[in-house]
Length: 340
Image 1 (cartoon, helix red, strand yellow):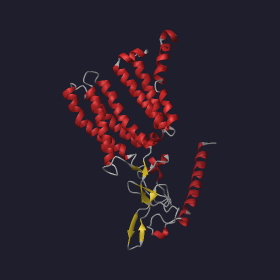
Image 2: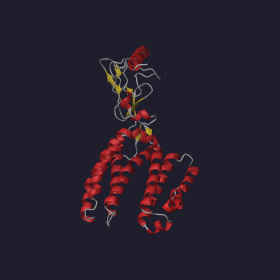
Image 3: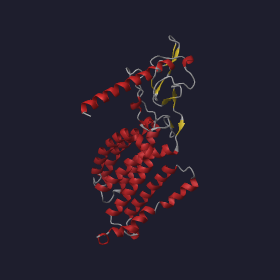
Image 4: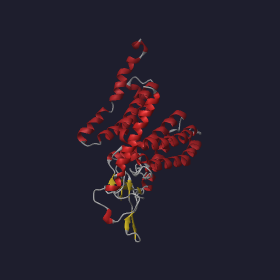
């Protein structure tokens, strides 16, 4: 079969699919209200969508002249989502433990990156001040982000629950009722799980630029300069990464955290040539990093299990020392004299 014949067949198949799609789509107006016109209360049927697509909705906007109460279909305002009748309603779901852990994970990423670059570029005395500053900056930025999101001034959040991956990427779900006009219904369907992370990054970067340069210059002999430059680079990268992969991270972050933590655990032991437990006890820095990895392991265990059965799930915490013990017991077998 020649390439020209293949192209002709593909073109015919595409035309047939478009014809079928138009035929199916044209029946929308026979069974549903016109998405481009406003509606009254009597036009809304219980359990029947009044807008096409997953995320298009109608806002309550009474109009005396036209005797209608609901607008035409479009994106719901921030902090709202369409219900079964495609009416925009306020997000009122309670944050689950999994949602809080996701926000905690996104908060830990810049914190750990700051720790890493500070250790890389400033391995001298008084650097502990930079670590303390990093922790305080992250804590203040997290609290500020919580206070800045609706309900403003309060540390608790109300949310639109994320049920599917497409909830994070509504821009790809804009419907075309007649294949002529696109209904733009892009919105934050997972309010506020997407926007609050960006707000946190903004507060974290602003606090770092205000506080850490002065600490580095006055108390650390300007040793934290390069780590500050690194933060100015990785914060925009984190924003872009969050914009593209936030949905994928939300549904997989417990396993990503576990894999990354185990990898960095082994890399640290290898770089420091730690092969005996006594080396951990005599090196406070390595012991601190080990405890930090155990904390991250515990975090991932809670995220995976959600502590649905607390007594059973808490037993997994007994496995926290297992990766370190496994490395220490098997490291000697990777020596050249054993592998040659």
